[in-house]
Image (cartoon, rainbow, N blue to C red; front, side, top):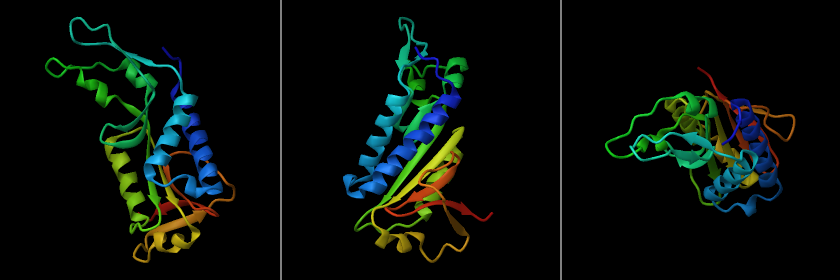
Length: 197
């Protein structure tokens, strides 16, 4: 069992995201697919957040379950999800028939979505904004969207021309400062993205 706090989860998420961004920027071709980025981020988070969360079993003979704090493709397909240690410990769960399906719907404290524009892809920054809206709709406590652009030659196309309400701010340093935002990294740039309301 773990004694990790939600603040520990938040710090680990920002640190792991920054490590991934740094690794990507130094060698973007180490990641050929979005799933490579997802795997790397989840591994970093599992290393930073070891231990488990005890969830009682509702079926008569079940002693309960020891869940990890980090999962991929969780809930409604959140790329990387960090469960909420506080909320999991205090929530009451109901089985579905003979199954403890609530294990697949635990409260998520930090939800992270990834987008990767690589050679041959045809999407733009709007995909990041769609993922941000998805995380908000799912009610995760803290959200983060990380967009990755494989080559600086693709950056201009990624920003697109049809998004007049989308603004980007180049960050001063090589790291993201916090959660609850959309960030985009290329080999030579790092931006925070916002949308006019």
